[in-house]
Length: 237
Image 1 (cartoon, rainbow, N blue to C red):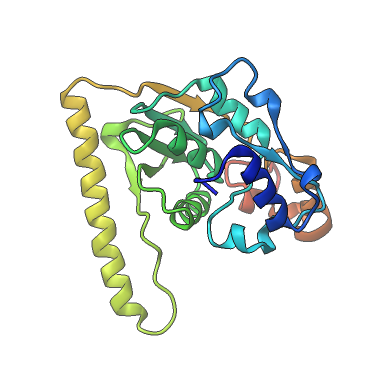
Image 2 (spheres, one colour; image 1 turned 90 degrees about the vertical axis):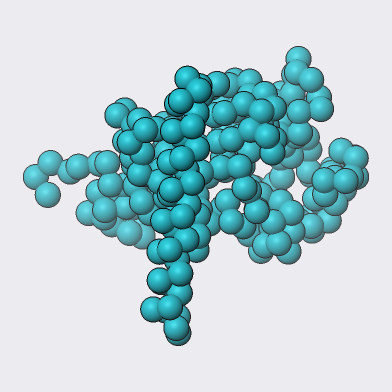
């Protein structure tokens, strides 16, 4: 899709979704008054009935789904190529992809989230789309500091047969990644460099949506809320 013109991309996306081309529309309000060559602003709206996750283009990483409001948060930040961005409350990870596109290969993005399972979701997204300029850290954004950060490995955790050997290799690579991230952060601190921009989009589209909250009532049970959303503490339970 990257080598196509916008019109060709619109057609290719509609074909991937197996829907009419007229049903896939560029979200114009994201680009109003902005330079149109900012590729991260190129977002297409598709019918709610479209099942993106079942398309080959989604499975092979050619397309990713994101709420236009999440992209709008990135647009408000006005990231520039080569910027170093800090994204607090970064899960589930779609904005990390957008930020990565915005800063380019010479920029970096640091994603911080308070829950390990949410960072694991971010890791899955980053690995799926082959994003190399993002690193993840486990921590509370209200107290997080880069010089004391706990870095989260982007290496996929081992599974299945031969797990012990894979676990050892996983742990070794995780340590190497952590050392590299720590060294990079220390180097930037020595040069008295800070982040160029900080994004705090804490009202997560997924967790705060009525559709998602309804699942606790109909599928998972309200008692599981504090387990699935770890920063929520239910008094008296």
